[in-house]
Length: 239
Image 1: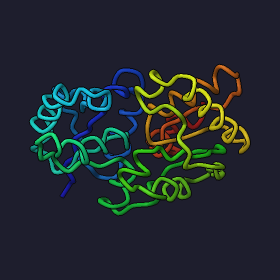
Image 2: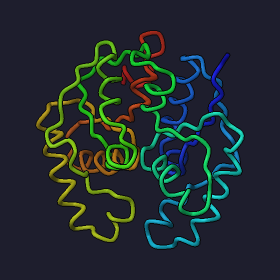
Image 3: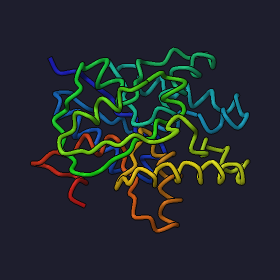
Image 4: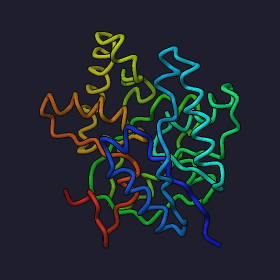
């Protein structure tokens, strides 16, 4: 029996990084899941909640429950948004459906480590704050990356330090955010990696933007896009 999954793309990914959402679908379908994309989905309310607009985030939490409530599982390519749903929506009076960040869904629900991926590049991985501290995803993304054929995984120094994005934190505390980003980029560049990966496009947008401005040549690539790449269907691997 095929596992029925709903993709919660998240508003940032849907708007700026749709290739990540497509990669999630390709990956999950390859692993035998039936994936649907409910067109009525919208923001989980994290930005509103974190900025202090608790009451305005409640209708968005309610909308999430209404849209995804009939599915066995909801998968999001974002530890940040998955954390908002799991940890915060219940405090807003909702009982959200089972929602997972991609790596924990693959490992904990599907029970797979080797997803049949191929990505011939030197990669370092940044564990994002919400996936690490709120969801407790741990080393699941690293286990998935270690199983990718032809991938050279290099450890990121001070990996658990925040990159400085933090959603509206980067806007409200720009100088502090920039200093944190500088430290993170120094660590990334010290690895000699061609690619920096993470499970959240928000952090990758922040880190990748800094690396691009410095013309380092290091590419930000979401974990889903690496795992979706195969020798037969290389996705981003050959770029």
